Length: 90
Image 1 (cartoon, rainbow, N blue to C red):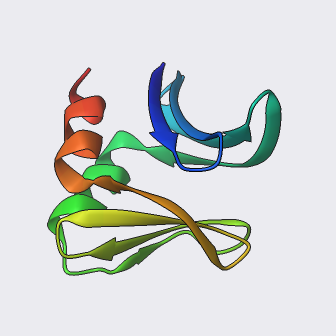
Image 2: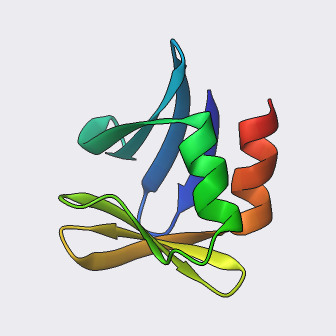
Image 3: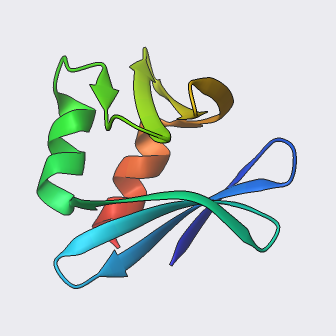
């Protein structure tokens, strides 16, 4: 499991789940939102010109070299593209 610390006591977890990854946004111990996606689709998102991944409560937006994490349409934090790419290699 990989953890990305975000502002406001939020954490984005990247958990392996069979052939997919489970992306979970938590506030302390409470799960706020989660999505499952394959490693291939996450890597494709990183390298493509696509600017958005997921619809619904948890969304990822690409902005230059950063990935903006949104919860219910509001920005809650960001990680770099290289951080996510490195996490997918483990």
